[in-house]
Image (cartoon, rainbow, N blue to C red; front, side, top):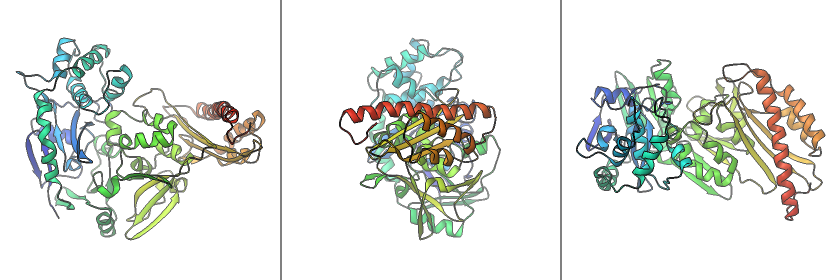
Length: 485
């Protein structure tokens, strides 16, 4: 068992045996003299603190933009870290930096280091494109008050066409260095600051939690990081699971899609989009690129937030949750995991291993809808996800109506579903279900929406689903499908 955290910072190997579980990467960098990385919002929204974290994925080097303000330092184990100081020097600027200078991509300059790091990461990404929408998505986690973004987008396009810089050339030997850090050992660090555990396997985690059941489990820290930076909470004992190989599995078979507890939204997006296209599109609106690079689907579930975007979409798809406590495993429908506000069906020492989504039958119509004030980087006022199946006579045989933001937990609209089952899928049935929604939920008013707005939007989204489903089912019927309208 190793007793230190190891990672590369630029060319230098860092080994830390005295580190606190709640030490943020941003604070550590500034103590180390890496002051080019700025503190802006300190909650993962503005992108001023963006750095690049490089890891091996399936023996390939992958660079990801990450928010240093909510990344906890122990999470860097086995990675390579790059800050603005690493990508170019005054005598040889990186092509991104040169483009930002020549095309006036900076004014006050406070946000510029973060933009540069996101742009360098995108320049080295698979499938990079000079399409405006792709660039906008890559830079969705970086905010600027000065330039209006157009010069930055032009700089990104220029940088994409530039040849490799010394920074990219040096990456050629990084994979071997990171491979050498893989020792397959558990990591346990205990100091006066607290206890840190990084499991090398799910078995190791299960054993550790049996003897340390009060341990906080952290995967991406995109929510837990705010406990530290905003709520000023201390985290005395943390198990960091983000790089546990057993929990990073993403597998698809005849039983559906199996997503491990450490799989990020970014890593799961393509597979989810193949299985549930609407959910794939929804993921593009969860946080920003740096957030999706860190946040995990199962972490969103474990957190139990009533406004989490993932759970309603998964509930409507019939997802099941895999839980483990020691050597005992159990599988439950996802909706049963959420018991009440802040309370989930997870026993002491138990953890989420994975979530599974069954194959979507061809005759099931599925949609998910997010309502928020902004497209990127915003929390839902209402998240609705619906799945519907009709019988040969056009009557509703199966209905799953799941909502977030409407109650103390993500949950299904039981009365509205009951109003649909067995009834013809027509305007009269729709109206009955719309009225039943008012009995299913008594939403709150808050800064994101009033109770009236939420109730009205929820019913209107069901109407939208009805109209979209009628059009799709008519198309299927004309094509000789199983559904008759």
